[in-house]
Image 1 (cartoon, rainbow over the protein chains, first blue to last red):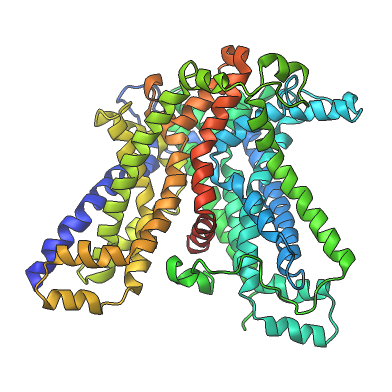
Image 2 (tube, helix red, strand yellow):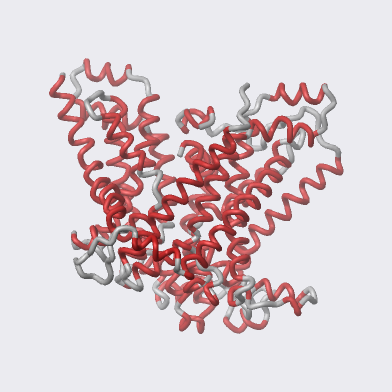
Length: 296
Length: 303
């Protein structure tokens, strides 16, 4: 029996471990070292420079420009997405005997979630297009032609246009998530609340929201992480970070440094910052929501 | 994290979940409130659906109509837009490339992940836990951190610009979630059937391929859908690993066409190309709608 066991385990585990080790673990491990080197171009010469790359970031205006946009999105995307999806899921799940036709709302709202960010970015860059775009066309038709813009070509608007698309594509996903969460709350709690004369609003804030803690946690972490990324949308909707780099984000800046400018050491250091930011974000969200833990 | 997230997908939420959310309140809302709720939800639904509908309608128009009558339906269904997108704009080639890469990566991912998850879930051996957590660690790191070293690893193996390279890298980055998910699934399967098979003298391989794998089918389908969407929509990995325009995958090729300003002369083909690009995911979504929603959301709670 014993040697039988290893005759299965080794061939079953080894291929995965090898693929995973070579293409995932090894690159991650190397990244930490690369971030401490000055490595430009394709030479194999990678002088160790300690924390120089991180110091350089402090004075890099373009880095801070990108980071500011990520920070803004970090505030806007999770709050807007969670607020909208909470509203919609509450309307569906708390709507008494069940809204007729609610299924179609769920199916359609969720759809953008299965599309690639590239497809969504291209689609919306058509919508925002100054000449053929349906948005300007719509403004013309309803007599607000003066509001027409070159949306994605306008430094004032381009980041907000991308934020809108990011929220537009994610709300359906969290709607489904929250509806599932709300349905796992025991109905007795609501019966009791109704007997006590609590309104639907009170029940929502008193029962639903606190018991949705896990789901809200997931939503904030996920949306936060996507606010730290946004690579594909920015790459497609705002070439080179948009006009005056008004929509540049760290991920795109890092990609540009590495694969267009061959500054591999510095780019990897920015990748390390991205890792630290995402870890801090996850820990922070978990810590903040943990305090309101409710046992039942 | 939450209670339903700890159970395997296929059993925790069978397909017969009610189509309409079960009411939390026994008493219905007032008529006015119901109308208001429908109004809000309908507005959002239209807002989500409209760009897609506009795209499909526009893909049948001529460039003239696109520019000068944006609000009218096309005067005729110009299927030739799709033909031009497929051939002239190379969408057909990109489509085929995507198909090759994703098919290969899906097969490799499902095979590797199910074998490894099974071995880790069902057999005790020294290092089992460490291996499991090593695989899990891959879920935590942003892929951007790995990009530069990954590019050089793939280059040193002479796999840049090859389908094999993309297939193996897609697989590598799909393994953590797939193993994690299937590990839970294999744990939850009853052991009696397997034990009976062993008593009957079946080899451990037979037990896995003939007994356990068929029993794990719902889990494989869920992981399969999850990986199909993730791999079909992958953008950053092909962007750095597939510099050869003849072998661009679909999302990469589409971004290339859209960014490449020279192509603006043929808007109708670009719209048609976008529509073609959406079709496979649309079809998967329509057929597996409930499973996709479950798979992705339950995946979120577990990850």
